[in-house]
Amino acid sequence: MNSETTTTPLHDGNTIPRIGLGVLRVGADDAQRSVRTAIESGYRSIDTAAVYGNEDGVGRGIRESGVPREDIFLTTKVWNTNHGYREALDAFDKSVDRLGVEYVDLYLIHWPMVSVGRIPETWQALQEIKKQGRARSIGVSNFLVPHLEQLAADSDELPVVNQIELHPHMQQNELRAYHSAHGIVTEAWSPLGQGQVLADPALQRIAEAHARSVAQIVLRWHVQLGNVAIPKSSNPERIRQNLDVFDFSLTADEMQAIADINQDRRIGSHPDSPPRNGLPYDD
Image 1 (cartoon, helix red, strand yellow):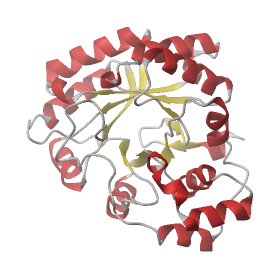
Image 2: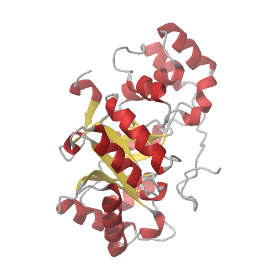
Image 3: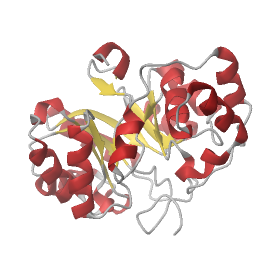
Image 4: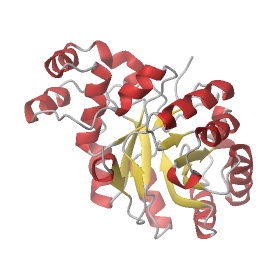
């Protein structure tokens, strides 16, 4: 693998790995082990959030890996109850304290929280954090086109990333087109559809043709679309397999076959109805 194929540029001049490790629904101790395993397996991107309750474990895993902090792309997020300028600044301070780091590489607004109506203030806080050098890049998560348009109307700085639910059964074509037109990188959470897409016959046929797992086919699809993906796993072998997607390619016909299985079906919450329990989908 090389940096030309495993990272993608952000519009602020930074780069982000195309495959990272997500740690949603992973306890702090398990997150510590998974993060260390992932980094030892070659991962250089870790995605967490304040509401996941495992930032301390993620920080320990990074330190235990022995890989220098500057070589790790670390993402965390401000939660729904901390929208607002001062609130977001305070939330960031707590996140970096729990992580045990001086800066993060990417700080995201976790959900738009339109009902609260404080996107502009919250974004101003993220801009201030970036200005201080405590977040190298700033972005959003779960924003739809109207939310992004509101942000653009209130600020001359667009997010570098919008992290959204995206998998073969929820392909987000309209939103990805908007991102592409405005230089925003599409980052997929639940890139494997919580495993629900892995039984799809079209994906299984493609996997058989390449002698790969279905998960690897789906992650390769993300890479070829230009998405960043953050699959979650606590299984060391699956962690390693999920990164091993840069030495083969899907054909145009195979990419079309995957496009054809889109159902526009969400597994998680709709951005206008954000979760209250910290999870993007119900238990």
